[in-house]
Image (cartoon, rainbow, N blue to C red; front, side, top):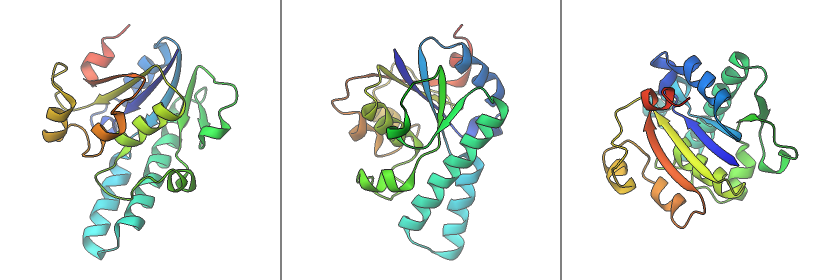
Length: 184
């Protein structure tokens, strides 16, 4: 069983990241861990407002922010393997952390826009690896019974997410970090 788990970058600010990584380690099956961009992506947004550079540059910088978080995850959990390309996943370890490759995402036609964040990229990855499940872990409050469109309108998930999971062959869940931490 392959589960893609996206840990929101805000978990770093909420100081819940180490506990969430421990939960990932205990989670059943093989895990592909997708980091949010967190404070690194926030800096990209601020710089774009200040300097007015285009969305293509901002998108690429935000992907690099995800890479920075992947390095942070790997530093906290050295046993978690790092990978940057779907093509490089030959033998799936228990937990692997994705540091997305900009060129691979460009080749896949991922539109450079703030409408597509690590949420949608996690959904794209889940589809590419034919995952069984996608789990988004958020630091904000999440109504687990809400439709994805309601979570989208509420700003819990990004604008592009619903289209990325439409027709997906995997189960999708969006949960709050406290709920995730209660999973044994």
